[in-house]
Length: 518
Image (cartoon, rainbow, N blue to C red; front, side):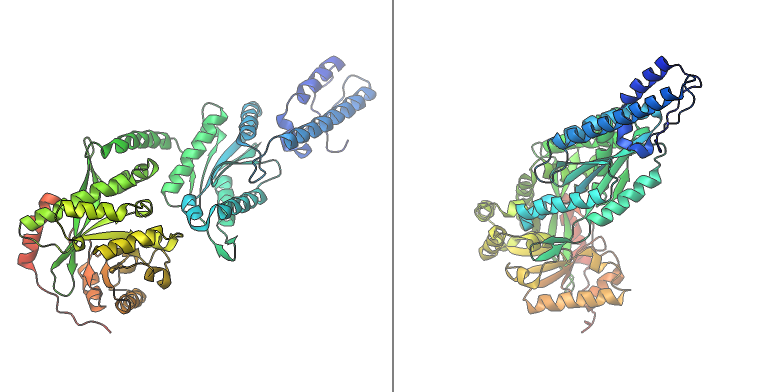
């Protein structure tokens, strides 16, 4: 009987003791802790020690039977066909019991939600089989970091949830430490086919003492809110806080409005100038989406791009931006300004459209503009991740049409030189991360110089993005970068400000006289 003890009031009579035993046997939450968490210390019950022995034996046997029954029920529970984990319904049922019993026994539990970041893109690049393999591996890694009686389930593609068995003291630090360990394990290299890849994860959690109504649905929703906040922060860990509820309500309202904004012509193009380092002349503009919100004013893409992505409206956005950019080109020309080209961003899904080349050709004819007056901006990550030939066919088809092709955010997507050569790229846009403090950092200077040299040998021009200071601008000119764009030149502006800006810029233009660093 070692390890089993039963707390009874002194001189409890036999009927009362049996009633207490029956009550204890009906407490299923006890079994989740295992025998190590049972607290049974027995004192004298009546005057007959045989009664005590009989009660303890009966109680022990009952616990073992109940325990085995629970294990059998668990094994009979349907499981996730991909990972073998218990289904979410079982976790919800157990979580509900733990919450109810925890409130009575002053024990706390926690719910965690884990999501593999950019999992849809991962599957698009490596395939469905690799996605399944990755989820099985991640599930195994999470399980290894949990206790035997903690419960894990898969709630979606690349999404997992687990609950910790209730304990008396579950503070924030313990949860953060656990999440940090699991995040590190998840983000270890994944073996995929003959190579290894890395994924990142976002984790959110909520402890039961943070919710007023002890319902598992509320607890899991709070953990999900924390996870979404972590994902928006770029693959981090977040604990639930009450202000997340208000943020979520605001986001939902904004999302609903954003879904209608395109139809209401509230999404407009603002234009940021690009200039030549050799002559100082304007060589183009980039069209950047802004939301003219009726109540909140002008909103940046960070406020609405996720919603347009989730609602499948990115292609509609690209259409709107293309038409506005071509309309701007036509009006600049009528005003006596010849802008070589205006850039429009296209994401991966739009670039897979089999009718993209014909559509852009038709729009150019409609505005009576030559194809080289438009620059198609393609993210380097899109080229690096392009597993099929649809994107390459469209990009090269647009280049053959005569459109300018910009490779955006170069240096962030790990595209190989061979993959870049598959695309008819006109210009590399060097990412801001390489430009920042380039005038003060010799290592940055070496990187930029290497990019410029590579581009020249591949027959491409270069443009540095995010130039903010005169020092950065001067150094980029010395390093041979052909064009610059950024707040140090001009901030994005609505169309009606572009013509006055070009007049002022032309009047003050002085071509930089700087020797190039070889």
